[in-house]
Length: 267
Image 1 (tube, rainbow, N blue to C red):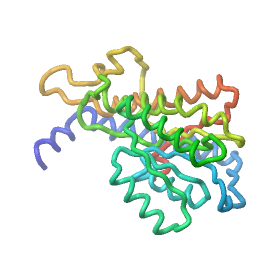
Image 2 (cartoon, helix red, strand yellow):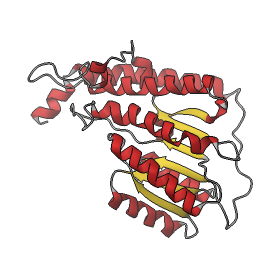
Image 3 (cartoon, rainbow, N blue to C red):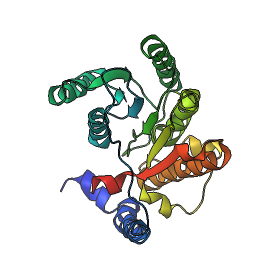
């Protein structure tokens, strides 16, 4: 075992993940089991859309993992899928792979970096322009905020914020706000799905100060001090859930906003 790995195993953050995260996961599974027995089964689309206009959905972080699987599944269900990610090369490879398996899939690729305000604004402008040019209805029916990271070290974005905080929480919040008019204008019920995490249960308090958003609360305070990656990750997931709750209670269509625990899907 090298020095870096040994240092990680001996760190409080490692044991926080090993103990608290395991307990939170078990607790969440128990809740899902108990509440799921009384819940109604989700309704599936009975017929696929024809060759004409298809409902548009946007999937962030669509080049790997759950995002890639969701994009393929939604294309199979008949959606016109917009894949968003940081690497255009990976986006093109993902599009080609899905189209090899589904020749009739409707796919579009747009570059998007949630750790950059400019990138989010550019994506929103490009998407709106593309929809106006190609769709008879200027609307988005589904937005899946899937993109997220678990950074090993403290990094500051060009906007002066902690990279993990901006990518996992602030970026998706801004993106949803930009696309909300398109979601509201849909002629059929639209949906926003945020992939969250059971780790939000480990947060003991919320700090929305400027220092917290810049990562100063979790970043190294001295030379040699490690980055509080577990605490930062937990912190980014709880506000995402709280925002969903607030939007569901304030918006005129509360059924639009939903949260999904990504680790439940992965297990």
